[in-house]
Amino acid sequence: MNKERRLIIAGNWKMNKTVAEALSLVEDLTRAVASVKEVDIVVCPPFTALESVSRAILESKNIKLGAQNMSENHFGAFTGEICAGMLKEFSVRYVILGHSERRQFQKESDALIARKAAAAHAASLKPIVCVGETLAEREGGQMEQVLETQVRGSLAGLTKEQMVETVIAYEPVWAIGTGKTATTQQAQDAHAFIRAQLAKMFDEATARKVRIQYGGSVKPNNAQELMSQPDVDGALVGGAALESRSFADIIKNSV
Ligand code: PGA
Image (cartoon, rainbow, N blue to C red):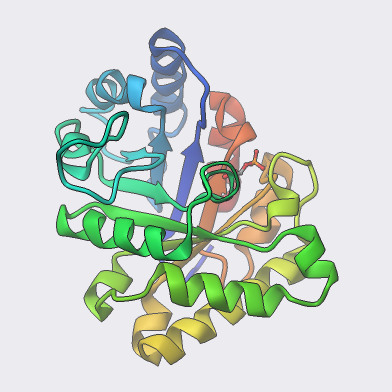
């Protein structure tokens, strides 16, 4: 597939996988995608498996490591938190920020996510900033307003250079883990809307360089159609990333 931007497909393992299970998954995945060169592939295990997975992919040329969250602070008295510097010790390159589950259960705000994004960039980690509307918001005709608020708030204060090194994941909350995928047109429309916001916040050239992933029930059988949309530059995959075969098939079907 000839895309304007390089595809980035990330697996968000959420709170799943022991170290042994994580190793088994990533070893199988490494073999399954060894020949794929056209896609940035990222795996985001839980913190407890980062070190082992990091070692396991040391030799892999095309699989990079991501974390699922981090603190906005650099060190200190923040019990239970993990900072960017700690992630860097395991060669983590990406960090998911503001996933809808954290917005919902940990009450993460756009302002907090923006501080985390700034802290990630300060440590040369690339943030994957998640945005997306709920079903009630979509049905209430508020989708654009919600996306605009989240995009402006969560990316506030970034420089153009940092924005280009930031990935956005558009994840309609109603499509996460539900088996309901946005139609390709719904995904394209939301991505184009987000890119238009970036053009207003930064400029057209910056907006054109930013990769926007789609997330929400991405599976091997819908990946190709989603990726064929001009503003869809990859996927953030939850459930289907927990098994090497389905994640590898999503990747292979996307190129
Ligand atoms: P899903 O999750 O693929 O299981 O819908 C996506 C996500 O939450 O990132």
